[in-house]
Length: 490
Ligand SMILES: *Cc1c(COP(=O)(O)O)cnc(C)c1O
Image (tube, rainbow, N blue to C red; front, top):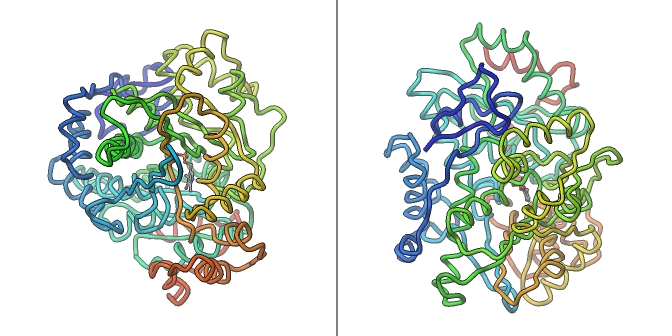
């Protein structure tokens, strides 16, 4: 199955490419992305037959349906990483939290956040492609907290790939920082920046487009690649768990096959929700995708009014930082799928030149057939965390945003699946504050307090971070980033 360009072709790029090329060179003409030209169809018989399959078997069947051009042995090695999740038999548990309300827990992987769902297998595939082609890649990542640990964890000690990961020093939680700076492998470089996440991200964008930097890499025989969430190599693994979660409700006899459900997703760059959209278009019975945001609610406004408008917006730092995003990159693939390349290019160009675009009434109507949206403030989120905890469920602030959207968007008495994207251990000070009123400044105090309040253990992978030696000690000014990376590559 081929991938095509969301903004049309400029005569320089390949107009359509196989899966492997879309992974290695994710950027298409006019700054667009590669998106599936067609989607495989999953019949009711297919879904029926997958009821007896485990997670890895389902994943393998979906990759086969997409006709990915990756060797079977590599696919197997990639999917075997789900064996490292808490329960190898069931890497994504789906649990009931209320009447008609189920949570699909996507955070049972090595770094305790949902980025592992896609980055774990993606790391194996990218490294294998690089080895087969005899090429060396540098992956640049800028992180506010969850992508960094997951990218380092998946690429550590993998051949032909090196990772340089920038994070804002003092701008992540203790747990997130420790997950990065205790990673000890010769192909990984973790760099703290004096500055904010925006500074780190801007520095990264400058490097990616710097001719001098690219030439220095070329001299070393190294190509640049990106592991960010626009890479279709990540998106494909985000289709699978939506299908799995649905089948899990059928297995638990909560729904019968064919019954529609709501998919309720805490959104940032929209990779998670896009996976749900593709699953639906491939044949999964879905009533609507509920898009939950925090106070950076550009998507709520887009879906409710058809206007994507950044002119009067600045980024707000919230207690769900992984959703603190104003330019939600994967929306482009939705626009492309609904409106085609010409219109997508027009809208995306308007966003970059006017900082806004406006859908027509008909276009908005199409969007609203699939999506419904609401946003949740930090205070509301804390109240949802407390209420869920009192009813027996512990959740993180990203997951909490979905409860508000559930309350406002659910119009029919159908079952809802909320996607939980982080374990409580990753955002413990906010959760402890919601549960006990404490205002901890250190994660370890919050972890201990929640552990005592909830009567649960701090998982060993988190606890052990606090006594691991720090292997990555570099903290520098922005101006030193380029030199530091080049030095690391020698
Ligand atoms: C990345 C992330 C999100 C946002 O997911 P997108 O696919 O970018 O929309 C939400 N919650 C957590 C905890 C994350 O790490």
